[in-house]
Image 1: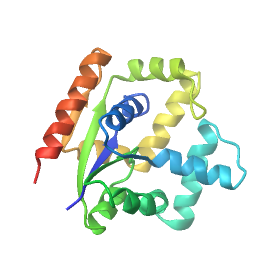
Image 2 (image 1 turned 60 degrees about the vertical axis):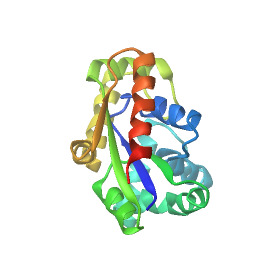
Image 3 (image 1 turned 90 degrees about the vertical axis):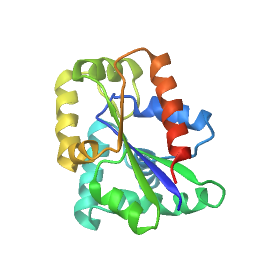
Length: 185
């Protein structure tokens, strides 16, 4: 059975940092947000903090809660031609976890945690195309994420990594985690 690490956490918690480290450790990473942005580009839509959330919400309303996971299923099948473990970066709904199970894979939910103020400072500092600079926009995004059902995914995590310490400690914790996952039967 192939293992899918379902990477989840609130914005700014460290999911992208974890994803980069997984890639360095030769674990394939499929970004769910990347899939949404790719679809938006294909449609010629502007990409920013609000447009991404609103597009996801609209597509989910039109196509159901499996919309985002459906965008990445083909890529996941390709990855599993050569790998036994993959990371789905950015899961926000339990329906995505259930879909991984339906595909015959073992989902392993990894919740990344960090305090709200720390997360906001990180987001302002990184300046991604889907980010923002005001606290009111941060709060709006938090509500959107919670509305997707991310709290349930985080609460259902099989493992948690706290990302309040140094980056070096966090990266070391990721290495320990992937060793545990590789040892799982």
